[in-house]
Length: 121
Image: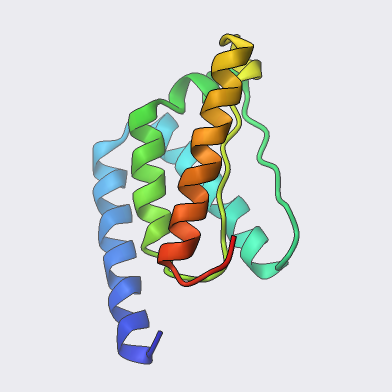
């Protein structure tokens, strides 16, 4: 990514983050910032997995819509080598088979994002 592309991506990231700040309730926005902090840690310490444990309340806040907003925000970071995987299946009491299928769907989605970003999964 050239400097102009980086600056434009940074601008879009900041604008979308501002939209989310205005559109999310304070608890959800705090969760978003905590996840972004964890993502930053993962980027700083490349090739290191960072787990962000969610409290039961945070798991409730992590709705499919919240996940889509988070994914859209992280996509604006560009091909920095970050892969995000969310595993909420067994900890939220969902059916184990559904959890496995959800994990597989997320794995395929992350691979598709990585390929689209020019990364090899």
